[in-house]
Image (tube, rainbow, N blue to C red; front, top):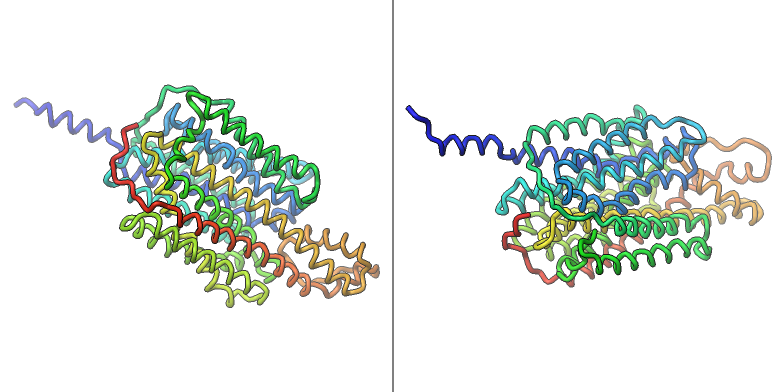
Length: 528
């Protein structure tokens, strides 16, 4: 009896069809590394600083190199994904990321340690910038339009939650060795690659030219501007070098915009910003990200310095923020499905602004117990807005490639995170030094010596205040003896300025959210 050729063809097509759940799981495993690494290093920063003998500003660059590389190369990653294929670039980014992670964990001690870490943290960021836009494009490709919104909400919600998971995982791994925070990426990457192969992810590409000049301009512009913000605490806000970098970076970014408008196949198609909703989504993400990634670094260092917490205890301190974020993410997704992104963004921004403000007021109580409701409130605010703003922005990519639009939104997010780290680090260093100077002057140290000593103390804080007083009979040693409690309070007061800044960032995001037209994208985007 002859077989049914139609049934045979259908069976063959089904066997080649992508496995949607496996594909989504594979992409989440892949991007989990990129989001966890935005915050996991923060919890281990004191241990890394102490063992390798790094300065506080050097350690900040270890954290910031990853964020800056992400911001600088996300647009390039999205474009490469469109041109060479989503699956291929996703796997390439994953391999680059995991090899860089292993090399970060193998950093040797000595004078070369700081350069080693910064270089391979930057290549980690490049790998992540290649991986994330491609991973998102894969999710879009394998899910039909009627299920795409739910899949994207899950993708953005879980990936955002993983950012908050970084400090928790970091605290546990640091108790063994801080090097494990990098090595843990190896098994995760292997799982992501295996699942990608099993999921039969289809390949798609566009035969277009790569805008190399645009990629160089955007990387240079972002690098210069963030360098200026980062080094302001060392060079001074009145320093020529500081403003040369900041203004020079801004000029290069303006040149980048002008060049892109004249290029036939630009790295970023700025026409997408003609959509008012997309512009508002991007602004909300920018101001929210000024607080979201930096909060894990500053809260963990505050817990270890001002609260004398261990890395594990600091991770538990951040668990309050994570719980609020996780619960609100689910509600934000439901609001997005029923009413659109605007209500969720307004609720999230308002709740986040109030939460960070009240949290800042409680920092000087030096008690974890008194702070948890406000930490949870701040986390809930970010949770409400993150997935709706991100998903709504991607839904606005009608007529443009998903890789390209994802490159834009993720560039905005990670550039904001890099600026937030740089600016708030400068604020913390400046205010801490001023507070400690007053403390040492009050203990009898001459003003000039007090100022110089305060600068060294503020930079040398590692999060391991064990109560041991410095030895020696000199005036500086005597002034520092018994000053531990006062210095911890000084550091808490300096952190208040940082958290008030985060509250202001969320308040500005709320004002931006008010301008969202409230429309929803319901039509089917064209096939890539």
